[in-house]
Length: 113
Length: 114
Image 1 (spheres, each protein chain N blue to C red):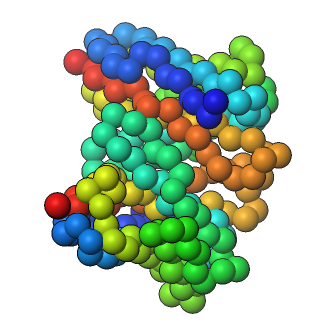
Image 2 (cartoon, each protein chain N blue to C red; image 1 turned 180 degrees about the vertical axis):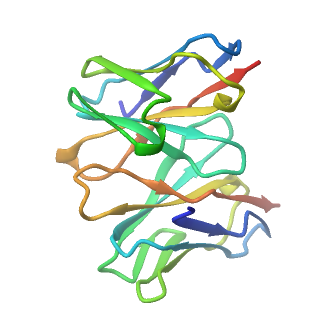
């Protein structure tokens, strides 16, 4: 099963409220990623977990938090949503030992109003 | 700064024609170039990939041509089918990274008309 599951598929949030997005995979991958995709823009890497080590990209360092309570699950947390956070959020996973293929979930579409 | 660029933004071809999708990059450290195919409502899925030591990679009707000197690559889809209608993302990853930290282009939306 090469499935990355994301919940929910659609999320509506109020400006200033927190948002928590969930991702899971059953491939025993050691690395999980979060990408942000806005219309007509390239998917942008926000952060990734290797095992229990969180790596955040420099320009998104203060905007997003994440947790990985176990190998299978990873969350993306926005403490106070702004209109600019409206986007598709793609979770992905890969394994350092099995090559470079990255498997993506179907995404969560977040709309902030 | 857009490190990976794709053109055209959208492309329409007739069934049976060859679709050519272009990609260019700026960072000489990139050495792995996957193409991802995404259908509406689905996540991107790996279609085909090439490493910078090769200049061509074929998989059925899909071929990547790679020009390291010019930092350009292209995806050729021969005998295009309506089922190939999707968004195609070119991505790149540096050899120095132990992780698949992909840098994506903005995508090309392909429509294949019967």
